[in-house]
Image (cartoon, rainbow, N blue to C red):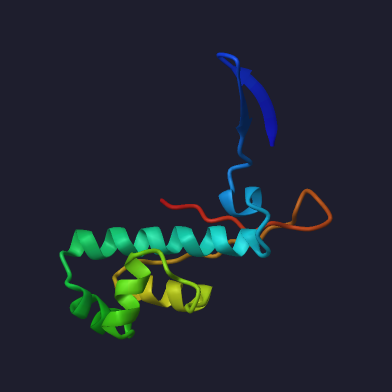
Length: 111
C-alpha cells in the first residue's frame, strides 16, 4: 500500500484487495468468492427471485440464500458459488495462462 498526504491527512491507497489489506489469510480466495457473491446477488435481483425461489434454483436452502445475500459466504466453496451462478443462467469461463512471476495469482473478471 502507498501512503500519501491529502489536504494534510495521511491516506493509504489500498492494493485492490481489501482482504489482503486487512492481512487475512487466503485473501485472493476471499476476493474471488466475494466477487461471485456480488454477481449472484445481482442475478437474483435481476431475475426478481424471492430467496425461496433463488434457493430452489441454486440448490441451497433459503436460510443459506439469506446469509449469502447478506455477505456471509464462509460456509460455501468457490465451486458451489460457481454452481449457483450456473443455475441462475450464467456461464463461467476459467482461463489458465503462465504467470509472469514464480507464483501465480487468482483473478475474477466479470464481463
